[in-house]
Length: 398
Image 1 (cartoon, rainbow, N blue to C red):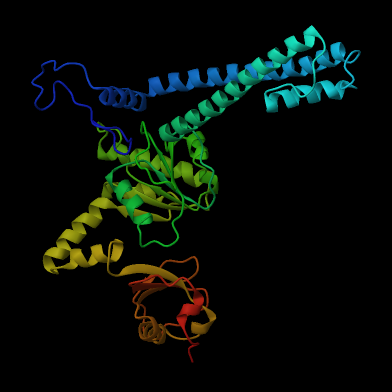
Image 2 (cartoon, rainbow, N blue to C red; image 1 turned 180 degrees about the vertical axis):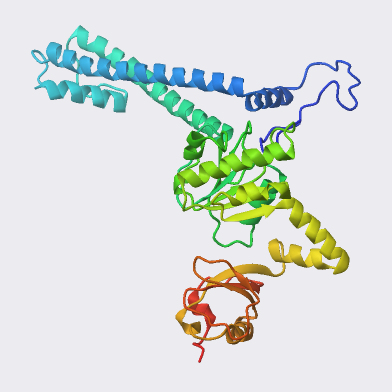
């Protein structure tokens, strides 16, 4: 089965549809290349072997480059020693080093060579210079190949701050990526995926894949969880043989690890079974999303209130229509009531105020009409566009 996002072409199989298990001849050149690429990307052992050979190749290239530089330096000293007595253009040690540099750049001798040793040094410098350029080019190329391989296989480290870390992987995680980096999102934040996958599941340039165990502290540090602003911990389904309770247990360990490393990180946790909610409530997780409860409640409510599922989908997804947006109450609305602010936002910006929360508190849905609004409160509105500037609130309210 082809891995999603690995960028591997489909390779025909003799046992596949139409093959009937019969040998149909050798694959074409393009198919052979795709097959080799698929095997390299899908096998962790082959990938580690390739990276080890690349690293050894780089060490040999660096050693050869260092030896070449030393040889060129020695050639400059010898040239000065053999030419200084009979060549008026060679006046000091610097002249010998200058002759080597100019010979490498111009690929011809800048001064007349008097001695036979000097002529030999000239050809030696040209040979070593070409070798040095080839080794330097090879070292750079192998370094780039290693970087691409490590990035695609998740063997590197993230280098972000105030980013989002997705711990684990399942179908919901793919939807999370699409929502966070939808076209309608103006400020797309960098995302790090930490999961036990063989290759990156996405080609998004703002997403860094780190291959590892989400509950392991070292792998979490590779994902820069200590500098992350938000962590989304999903019920990992990379192992299909693990049941719902075991997935929740793994999610619980990941939550505890994240909270212990970075307590300030805002954690959103997916819980599979509602019976396990009590265990997660003992952690310091900021938000718990019980997938079974939400799905069951939405289906039941939609059966009673027809069209409700389409309305909820419109509010929480980005393709089109209205979305939820959080705003910070400016000084212009401080001291006014919830009702006045709701009327003001609807009149000036055609958005609906539905909930209010203190700076670090929980939202209160549909508070009383006369509830006061304070500067710095978080206002949850329904709007067709995002209000990012405080000045967009319009004239000060009286």
